[in-house]
Image (tube, rainbow, N blue to C red; front, side):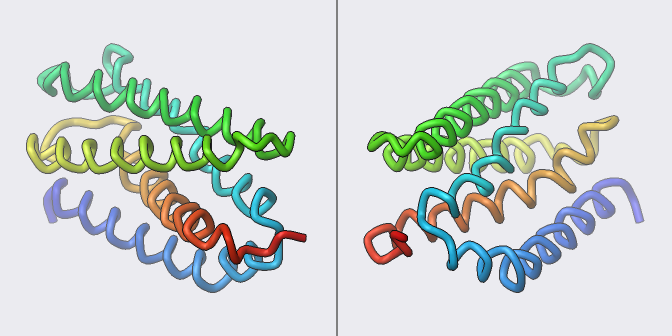
Length: 164
């Protein structure tokens, strides 16, 4: 197997593992919690998206990667992390804006993920040297995706979600 094949295999397997863990353990536990309490741990997964700034550290990734891709991914993730942290603070404080901030984060964060996926495919990212960033894409990104899907599930069901 070459590097791109290994990358896609690892990404696929991590997505499967996250989906199974989410369906079997995480989601059933969250459904027993009030909405705000259920959203907070899922948002905490997203707070670590500041790790995307690693793309801008000299020597961490292939210098031949397009700079605009690196900047948009790094700063998009940084903004997503800040929005997630803001939503956590608001939800934990029971501010009315908490759910609104969770929606703002979710829309921005998911759009940023889709943009990153487009970039990964457009430049054939796994064909470049990624250094430790490899693990962000193949291990952390699937957790981010699973977390996003569960956040959307809670927000969409917000009216009927456990209020106690």
